[in-house]
Image (tube, rainbow, N blue to C red; front, side, top):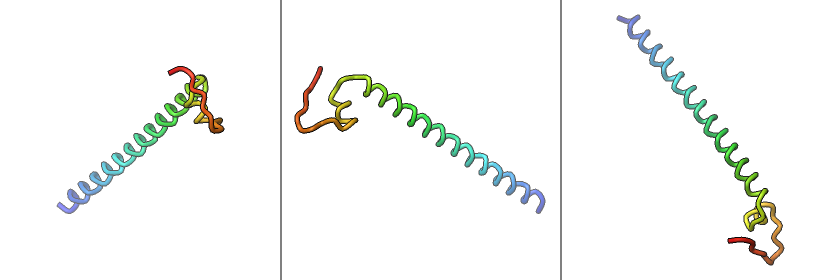
Length: 69
């Protein structure tokens, strides 16, 4: 019986380690997704002529010329 209990404890510990590794992988994937979307957003903003681009690259000197909507 002692061997069975130790085996169960080891199995539980191994399962918890695997779950922990899976969480780390998911967090890395989420972080990569966020970085990718941020880069795409910045690229989109820098290719347009709008107020948001001027704010993003800090080109506002006091007067703002609003183009478009």
